[in-house]
Length: 119
Length: 270
Image (cartoon, rainbow over the protein chains, first blue to last red):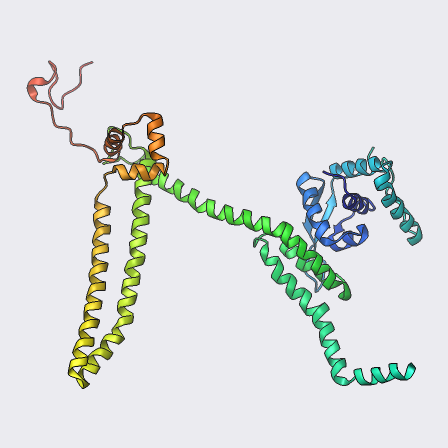
């Protein structure tokens, strides 16, 4: 998969909470990418086996149609973690990760994305 | 300056503009995104999960971000939906053809459990029968369509005929001429349909393969292919016709030509 800014942003967003269910709109918002970019990328992740998908239980939600969620697999966690570790030293992408860390600090979020996470 | 602004506000803000603004706001961020998205996702095949996903996801998008989100999602419908739709159409087209071919093969292949009365000593090639049948089916379908059209036109011309007949009562000459024209037209249509129908029956009865059939099966490169493989077309046609023919009657050999000790219907020698 070609390394792009969008890929790094989505990978970082997914790895913020790697074991949680990820939702399309929330992920797009956290990653800072448009839905037109996110969904094709999620399709590629699905095809590569990096994420699994599913639908919300309709009984657990009231008055709202069930949403589709995505969850990182062990393979996806390793691949995306390695990817982030790799680009950490790449000057083209370092700024994105630095921005994300700064934003999280400002918002008082726990930093989950660390270089070499999957290793 | 303040007077000007207050004057503009006083002029612009009326009940009508407020109601209009609310309506425009509601349509732009409420109704239109949902409607647009519901239409746009139709590009995805019916069972594609993205179709429901995008619609359901819209429910959690904040009101004022919906329009932007939908416009962005339109990109998904184009980049993902269009290829998916094309793949679906291709699969739909390929599936019936394959199913039909399998059905034809199953039909053409003799059932192992049932004795085949038409079994030929030379095993008929299933594809030969399939090709022949598909030609027949296409011809029949085409002529059936023409037949239906002819009947439709005939039925449609009935009121014209009635009118022509009635006008003939008022005006003998005009009525007779228009009635005759209508009758002639109807008769011509029925005769044409009958001719076509007969042609179908003739085609159905004629089960032999001709050189034209072979050329049609091989396509535009028929001559080139045959020249390359050095195939004698007449010989090929003869062989195919033998293969698709029903069991030939094998005459009993004359009694005098039987081997010694073997009578007709007797036990074969060990």
